[in-house]
Image (cartoon, rainbow, N blue to C red):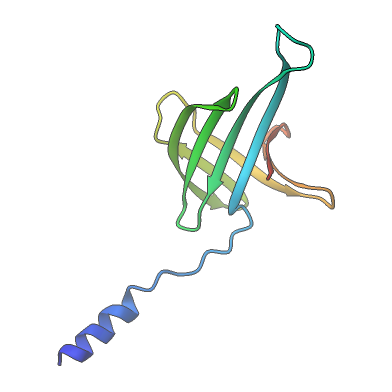
Length: 118
């Protein structure tokens, strides 16, 4: 009887596989020249890591240091990805996945590039 109960529970708790094309790491980068030297660059960029259980991690970097990190939830409905951040400082956003021969990018609904695949 215990064996049947274990088999029943293990079969019901299987997580469906998520193969959504948004899974992975996405970047939005800005490169600026430092004021003190024309040869030294300071980078500022954002990174989103989407995982297969509709959660993700957001990082904002400045000069190779993390200045903000938080989790986010995501979902996709009719090709529109909605990101809901845990951090109140960040505004929730909706993006569309755009794929071409050269790259993959997430775009805001107005067509502006939000992030590109790393």
